[in-house]
Image 1: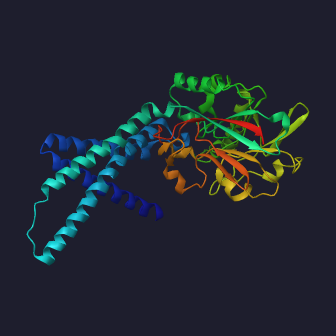
Image 2: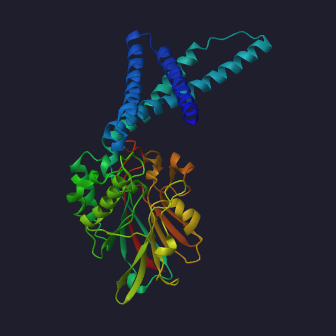
Image 3: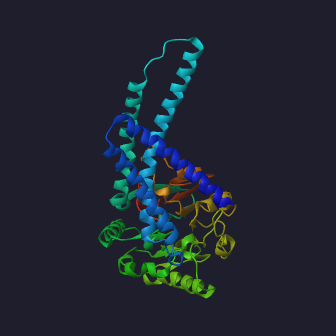
Length: 406
């Protein structure tokens, strides 16, 4: 019953968007060819999405065909939302003016000129997100950005002053199609020449074999002091149908084995001590723990054998873990590294000035660096992409963090 209500709401929204978009087209042109082409294009996109959604093999997880269908849907719908805002706003003004005219008995004025201007303005502005989504699908998902932070801590051991960490997250290898572009991203990671490399989960979308064609690429990743990883929510195979429970268990073991093949030490509610010049810091990694997601992670288990006074770096895939469990923990986790959100792969971001994404309405910490109670979390925007086959304004990220002694 619930899915029927959601479907009705979705259809109603799409119909509203299409009505206002068609009004705008009809206002600025009398060409039946243009009007028909507009409607035909929309019909093809919706029909393709419906066909793919109803026919794709759910036992294979999310396919590239589904991602393309979703990308096309968003590409045609988001610009129409811009049109809706302008045209509906103009309708409200027009209704108010008609009401005032009826009450005051003033002469009616022709509003056709203003309607045409608003339609032209709305369609012109809608072209911006349309072009952005096309770019995001073709090139934006490979527009890797290296973001560098310097963090100071009073309790950092002296030997680790200047120690560098490269964080990557959310590879989602099942979405990849262009080996040359992925190789470029891996080369860019290696160019950072950090002491330590940390991967914070989601190496696949669902199945271990999604990584088969990419092992040779990601095995090239290098770090002077080692490479460590954790699991993300997609690594458990929870988002697809399995013929037998044993198949899911076998796949999960293969996903864990991938990390060995590319040279990463996978931490499953475990910790490692990193030593330098006789001093050490603790690196902890937990299984996935997320609000509303799989909560397999056991932080207390990972911390067994770690001293409270030790400087600690925690890897946990979902930033909601930090929000609900970690940031106020008396054990004092000085630095937490997460991913998961992807910044929803779309938004507006002007570095150091402004950033916005619908992701902020779901996660309090959704992209970048945050600090509370003297403790930090970095939420990596992800290396790969999922569901929507592109990135618009929120680019794939390689994080480099330098630790400094305060």
